[in-house]
Length: 471
Image (cartoon, rainbow, N blue to C red):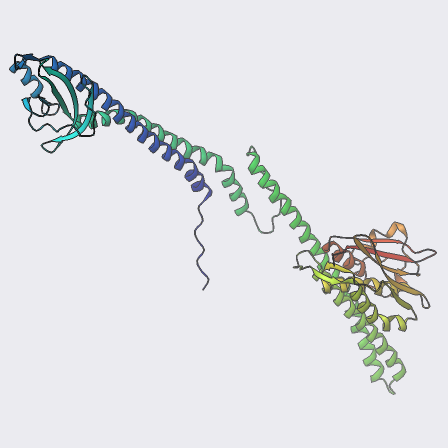
């Protein structure tokens, strides 16, 4: 069993993720910043309030003889202590930490704090398990003969600080949350509206028949969707051309195969009739069998060329590899020698002694050269010459097949590459009009082309250029 493929996120979800996730991060960052600022502002407000309270309390304590006079009425104390949620704790001590007035459980100032008279400083502590913020103020007291310090401490619960910060955060965060939700809705609607042309494109493709290769029409679509539709239309156009080409190829192949097969059937019937005669006409039957053999050879050649053309089609996979073009030309030329001798043709190879490496498909290049040599042999009259040449350049090597046959008129040199096309000189050979079409298709697969030119004083030169690979 094949492993399950991971589920891919849709484009809509990816867009929502990349748009809403940064927005959520920004909102959380803004909430954290608002909370920090609220805590800072609330702490600053409470610190100022405690500083004022400590100085106001210090003014109510006055030196008197060897002691202190405290002008702190009971009514004022009740006002400070009546609200349990916003209660103010206080303590006056002189010398410092020697209780005079207030809350005995007031947390002592940290030892690390510098005791500068007249300067208020702040620290955090606890009173009966209650977290408080404390403002402490050292003031000079006593007499010139006996100078002392008086410590005034005022504390307030930190719960008020947190409550004030929560109110500020709530007042700032809720509008931000509403804005984020509204933005999310707008983003969702915008993405849905922006992806609607893609949905239309999908429906137009899903609802059409596999045989319908007409262009896709999208009106008033964004440029990105138009570009996608244009690319699909170009692909459909190419597929339509390939399908039409395959249909023509099948029709032409059926027509080309029908003729020799019908001839084979007629010739075999004639042979049977000659052998059934009394007495049998052996000589006539032998001639008919010779024609049958010729028709079979032509049919085999036609089928082989059709298969070679199918292998050279762009749809067929092609893996290019380094090969020695000189060695390949030598092998293919040697294989064609018996056919050349049978037609009294002088077949030769002209090439340098060093290797000529090119990138190509060995089987297809062998088919290319074999077709060029076979065409040259078929159309060159007996006693003629066919020469395979390899001409090395600076960065290229040119493969040429030269003959001294009738050649091809310049007006027909584009048409001879069409499938099943036979020129005016066709009667001189036994071709079926596929050789040059195969050569042209193979050349295209190797990113090159075949060029036909005159071989003076008469004849034809077929040339194909290949890029040389470094040794």
